[in-house]
Length: 153
Image (cartoon, rainbow, N blue to C red; front, top):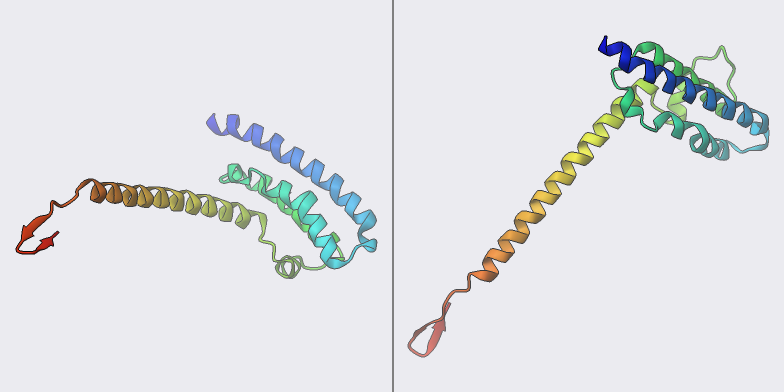
């Protein structure tokens, strides 16, 4: 029951991502021959790849059907950028573009968010400990004791 209520909005979300991405890929396909390889990569990342990455941490644990749909979008984008044919193997193309497959992009995003959260908590805790240590030492002034002609602290 719970999976049906969660999967339905995810299915709609993935469907919208795919639809808008394919529209933009088709536009890129029309102008691809006019662009250099580097410019095509930049445009591809700007107009499509960012859509695949936006809120993809929500897709963790989603059905393989949804992940496969997004992977097909990424494969199509990679083929347009690299000018490879539909029947060519896609893994070397993705590796050449330095793009992770969608399933691994999702896991990477989760790991990155976890790392950033843990690091931020550590930095905040460490800096507050440093601040409290500084405040404690500044409040605890040692009284001067005179012994002979010199002062001891």
